[in-house]
Image (cartoon, rainbow, N blue to C red; front, top):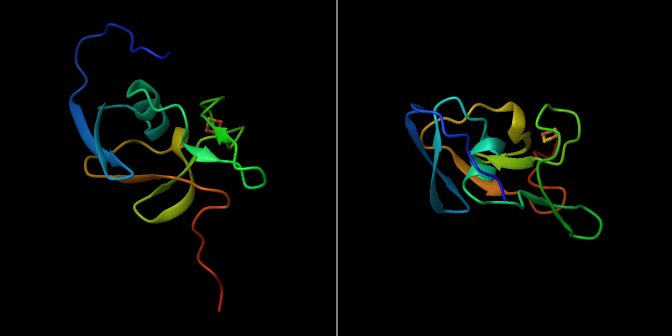
Length: 100
Ligand code: FES
């Protein structure tokens, strides 16, 4: 459904989604790299478990929440992709640090 514009350049940036190796490009956000790789579900809703996908791509809708390197509730559209990132699909409320 999503395609990159035919622009030259953009160094390949390897990362993983749920352990699967994917590749983005330099300058991508995590959400942009996921969409360009054909990933359309980055989280499930907290109540019904419905699949959700990035929507606004500018930090407003919170539909792009993912877990990045073990930290949940990260807005994928605001996080620049970095080599070696371990991105996980966020299920429901996602991972949280609980206060003790
Ligand atoms: S896509 Fe809307 S906040 Fe990230």
